[in-house]
Image 1 (tube, rainbow, N blue to C red):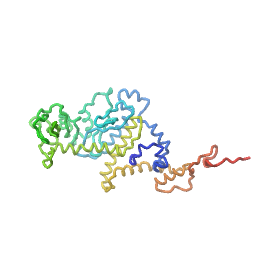
Image 2: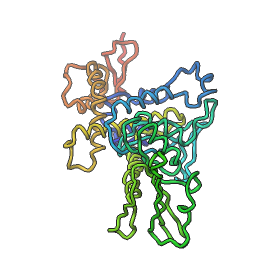
Image 3: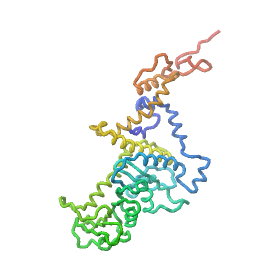
Image 4: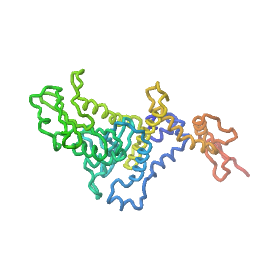
Length: 397
C-alpha cells in the first residue's frame, strides 16, 4: 500500500472493484484486514496501567527497541553519521505529543535518531517527563545514540540543539569520535571574539583553536558572517578540522567546516521526505499503532539501502528504484500467504480466485469449486450445494 500510495484510501476502496488491486484481494479478506488493524497490540494489557505510571511509552517500548537492535545489527558502516529528529505525524491523544515550531501545523511523536545518508542506525522516542531518571539533556541523548559507534573513529554531525564544547571533548576523549556541528551563541565557553559581528565583512570567517599544549581535545571554532544589515553570523564547531581552509573559488567563501556540515546534514532531510512519500501509515486514533506504521516505513528504507549496496546494478537506470523495491518486497512477503490460501479455494468467489491466479502467475486447478459472484450458500444443506439470488425453492410433495 505504501508503494502504491494507497494507505489513505478507505478499506472498502482497497478491496473494491474500481480502486482495488488483486494483491489485496488475494492476500486476505477485507473483514480480516479490518480486524487486524483494530485488534493488534504490542504489550500485555493486564499490566499496562501499572507500567505506564513509570513509562509512558510502555505500550510499544519492547517492540520499538527490538527493531532498533536489528537496525544496529545489520548496519553497513559509514564514515559520516548525523544526529537529528523526525516527526511521526499523529493528531490523536498522546501524553507526549509535540508541536514543531519550524514545521507549522505538524503534530506528532518526536523520534531522535542517528542516521547515515539513507539508513537509520539508532533511535529513541521523546516520551516526555515521567518518573524515570532525568537523562533528557541534549548531551545525554547524543551519548546514548552514539553508543554503537564507540571507538570506531567516525564523525558525528549535529545541529545547534545538540552541539556543545563539552560534548565534543567527551566524544573525542572517551568515545574516539569526532564532532561537527552548528552552535548556539549562548553556549558556555564561546569567546566573545567569535560573537562580535560589528565591522566585519560579509562572508568573512574567524577561527579559534584549542591550544595543543593544554592536552585537551583539538576543538576548532568558526564564526562566519552570513548576512549584513542586520549582521548575522553562523557559529560552527569541529574536532575533525584543524586548519583555516576557505573555498575561495565561490563568492560566499565558505569554510571547510561549513561545507562538510552542509554535505553531511542534508541526508536527514531526505530521510524524512522519503519515508513520508511512500508511507504505509493509515489513519488511526491509537498512537502505538501510528508508531508501528512509522517503524515499518523506516524498516523499508533501511532494507532498501542494504539491498542497493549489495545489488548496485538492480534497476540502475530507473529513477523510482525505492518504489520498485517496496513493490518487490511486498509481493515476496505476501506470496507464501497467497500460496497457502490457494491450496483450498472451495467456496471462494470467482474474483478472489482470479486475484490469486494473477498474483501467483498460474491457473488454479479447474476441479476446484468456486462460488459465482452474487451467490450464497443455502441453509441446512451441503456446503457444495449453492443457490443464487435468482433461484427459487422448489416445492416438494
